[in-house]
Amino acid sequence: MIRVALDAMGGDLGPRIALDGAVEILSRHHDVFITVYYSPYSDLELPAPHERLSLISCSDVIDGDEEIVLSLFRRRNSTLYQSLKALTDKSSDVVVTLGNTGAIVALARHILGVLRPKLYPALIRELHSNPLRCLVDLGANVHCPASMLVGFAELGAAYIEALSQESPKVGLLNVGVESSKGSAVIREADRLLAENAWLSYKGYAEGTELFEGDKNVIVCDGMVGNAVLKASEGLLSFMMRKFKDANGVSSLFETFYQTERRHGACLVGVRGNLVKGHGRSDLPAMVGAIEYGIDIARADLYSAIEARLCNEAV
Image (cartoon, rainbow, N blue to C red; front, side, top):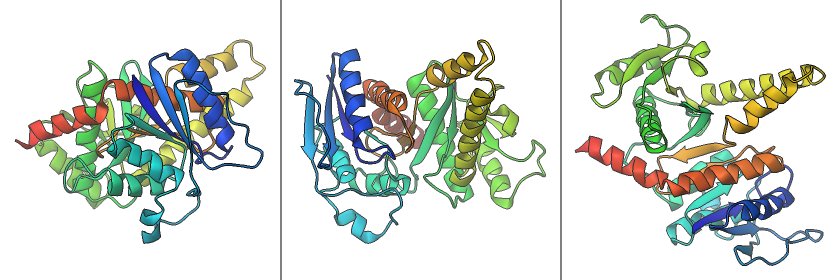
């Protein structure tokens, strides 16, 4: 039985999306149990009782625009805190949330702990699944020294090994492939990655290599990664609107978006499985994020990544 802890309060569309998503998932997967953490609304209609669905009411909600301050760690009855705590209590196998990215990263580090000292957690997004290709980081870290980028590469490589039959091939996102290109941080990261005995480092990657080429782990800082992701999503939405009247073209874009990409991103580097969905997720995206969480729980992703990192540290 896969046990999902679902934070219902993080999305822009409210808890209804999470509740409906949970019901849909239970109809598709008969070996999944979902615990929904929600804050009661006066007009919120709860789903009918189900033997594999548990509803836990929490008195606090961490909003999407809240600053990351020390008081955040004392808000133990928030839906996000309680869902993460379920991982440490061993009552869930994965957390799925659409909430505040900064709060998710901060609380995950605080409650779950990190896999290795000085290894910063990172958000990984699958750019496509067959063959698997990933972008890391997507916004968990904005100011990244070279050593942090090397850590992202290790996390991404371990992710590829855990979830596919592919061999990791790492590229460092840069403005060009020439050795003279990039900032001092990027050039130092390039030097460190080239010296790493484990990683199959293939050098710099340009933006055109995000979706094509032999590199399947593309590394960048969170500011760049988030901008790249949002720009890609925006372009896809724009193209779908542009071609909505073209026979077959719009459905092709929709198929690519819904079947070639799991919804959401995976936070790796902490002691637990966690999926962060987009705050604007609709019902199909919510369902996709939960199914992503189920996939990584089945693989026990965080344990596989931890074991790989420990092997390299020996």
